[in-house]
Amino acid sequence: MKLNIEFTIGFSDTSKDYPYIIQRKLHSIKNKLKKYELKERIGIDPIYKIDETNPMFLETKQLINDYKGDIILEIQHLYPVFSNVEMDKAVAYEPYFINRYCFDYDEESDNEYENSCNLCDSIELKENLEIQPKGIKRNSYNTFTLEYNKSVFFITQLMYEYLVENGINAKYFKECYTKRKNIVAYRLYSDNVLDVNAFYDNSYSDLFICSNCGKLHKNLQIYETYINKYIDKDVLEDLEDVNITSEYFECNKKIIVSKKFYNLVKEKDPKAMFLPIYIKHD
Image 1 (cartoon, rainbow, N blue to C red):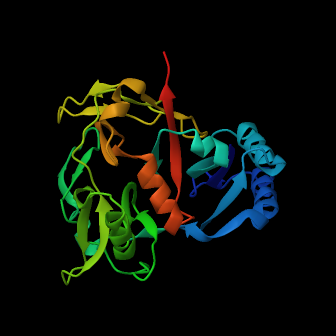
Image 2: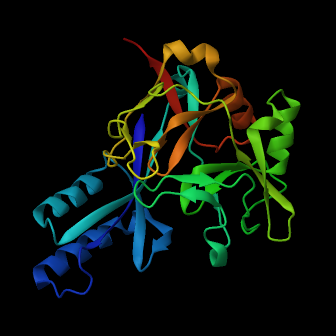
């Protein structure tokens, strides 16, 4: 596996006047990173994408260590790249459609929530979301996610029809609408809930029960590198084409799909991103 990291770098306090030597160091590293700069920005900060083993990234991390508290590096996304062998060995997959995204309606930013918890940040999505048609290529087989919530996954009408025609049950998809009530996409959904701790992702904390909402919850603890995902071998027989965890991982439960689902999607959308899930052995 190769890991590309998408990140920003800047001063920890933008209102502070830092010593000239620190300003010069940051300016110098940003000049060196220009070739890895993406079109997107967060505020005025460029976003960079680079292999974690690239000497330039290692130099950037060293600068952060040298000026801790003054210069910060914020990881936006991890982009793991797996070999065909690594993907084929998986028994299930986690959708990770972060390379394309759509938008909700800003003036009604809570229109997608049925319930949300102010303590653990878990959310329950409304059955049929309203999303903007902006950026969605309807005459494509694209997969994509929500711009502000990268754990909500969508497919286009053409992909939906293709999957259903090839044996994926329509119950795994919820229609999404524009404000004019036109169907614009389909959201991945499942009522096949896996047992607690059936899915293992050691990037997250131990399981706890939120004292406010009572939901089972795990917090992200390791965000600067990628850790393989596993599933308990005892639940393999109970896996359907689309499944959902009992626990909340940060805001959302995890969606887990079958090898059949994965293969069908990749046939039509080779750029669709998935994370492999392997069997957990004792």
